[in-house]
Amino acid sequence: MNVHSFLDLRLALALGDERRARLRRTSLQVRDRHERRVVRRWLGRQLVSLGHRLANEQPMRPVRAR
Image (cartoon, rainbow, N blue to C red):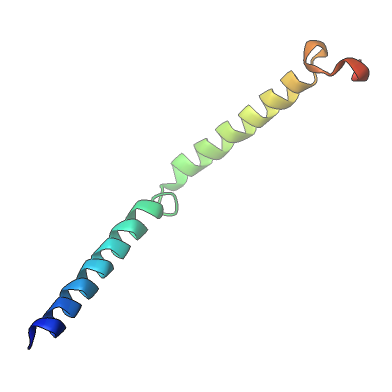
């Protein structure tokens, strides 16, 4: 094995390791436990509902819409 092919091999392995590390970081939500996902979805719905109620309150509406 000459130096050039050895460097290519090391570069390929380094790129593969970097890609695997990036996939591990980004796939956390996919592998999240079901219970946590249910709680997070419920919490998200509650926050959207709260935002909707706040946006419809009288002081939050534009002057022309009152």
